[in-house]
Amino acid sequence: MPTELPSFPPGFLFGAATAAYQIEGAHDEDGRGPSIWDTFSHTPGRTADGATGDVACDHYHRHAEDVALLEGLGVDSYRFSVAWSRVLPEGRGRINDKGLDFYDRLTDDLLAAGISPAITLYHWDLPQALEDEGGWRSRATAEHFASYAAVVAERLGDRVGRWITLNEPYCSAFVGYAEGRHAPGAREGTGALAAAHHLLLGHGLAVPALRAAGAREIGITLNLDRIEAASDSAADQGALRRAVTLHNDTWTEPLFAGRYPAGEAETWGALADGSYRREGDLEVIGAPLDFVGLNFYRPLTVEDAPHRETDPARRTAVDIGVRETDPYGTRHTTMGWPVVPRAFTALLLELRDRYPSLPPALITENGSAEADVRSADGRVDDPDRVAYLADHLHALADAIDAGVDVRGYYVWSLLDNFEWARGYGQRFGIVHVDYDNGAERIPKSSYAWYRDLIAAHRARTGKRRS
Ligand code: FCB
Image (cartoon, rainbow, N blue to C red; front, top):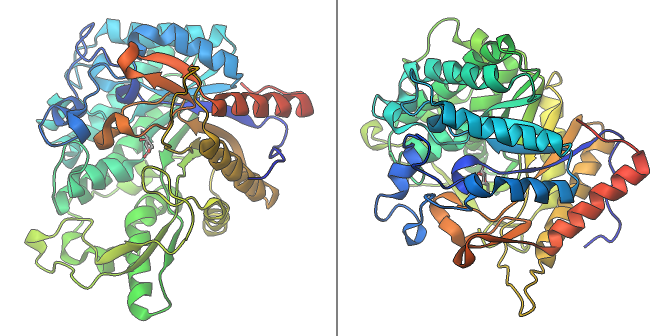
């Protein structure tokens, strides 16, 4: 582990991130409607140990304590998500004021603590009522998303500076509608491709709606991958092209180049008939942004997989004849993800070279799941997480030194939380949550390390961001 702290330019923003369903709990309180994650997690066999977000970290009731933890950390900004079905229990139409009141209070508490809120409008928790009408397979969902965005921004736009429309639409579309590992748990072909398009459209429709309601800085968060081929063989190079289309170009080409990905036909063949697209959609999707949010955890290496399903009726949209390999020979986190910080630098350089007009980037998530243990004296020492964060922040500083415009970094996550289908066994927090003990919070040594890094940065640059 490098002993020297990474250093960042004056005004660089430090933050911490969470998401509504992963921490809030209070799933049926104050008029909240069910989301696809309530339905999914309550379906036997869908999540590890049958875990649900019914209680999670109980953040809904303990938010004051969590704001105090953020204040102690000294972050400039806190990224949290709004649960769509708290605000609009049926996803559209009737507004639930109590839901908005919660985020209003949280916003004011953050501002009083000198922390600027960054709101994610969609971190995967589609109102179940909209899923019942087709979910993201349906174009109408994109329009409902823009209306919902306007409702939230009308209430909070005067105080919340930074808005993220969607979190990782890759996961919503492909993990949710193609692989079925996430809500709504579908395993479809064209369903997932239509979902990908409607997510982008929803994003594009929300941008002007947010601006009209007073939002100042608007972006989208993507989980773009640094992908390499296992070999130079023609077959593996083909696998690389298909994986890049699926993971990256599906999002970056419409958002930043005004076109659909060139590799679609090669990747999906007959599945990609584009019937869900309309003229003018690309202009909507390409609405200028103030920043692009990037989440980075690990790289991918792919090889050609011989057993590709050729019958379009049986193919899902992730069945693209690609298999992941793991040539890295490095440590893995408890998620099974290889730790390869240099891939983070490489991804940022690659993106900058490919899209010279890319808006400034914010790293909206980065962190690691580790097997944390609480010692007899109650402390949680997590040297592996500290090393992960230090190495990735060094890798980020390298990219900035090489001229990539990155303005800030949010650690994932403030708290251990409901890690989706993997449940509570995967701990990403810099604050430990003792679920057996009323969700008691215990800052880990990584919390202290990150606090000291922020303090050292401020002492060196004398600046605080808002
Ligand atoms: C990302 C998600 C986030 C969290 C991390 C580990 O894909 O955006 O909610 O689950 O992975």
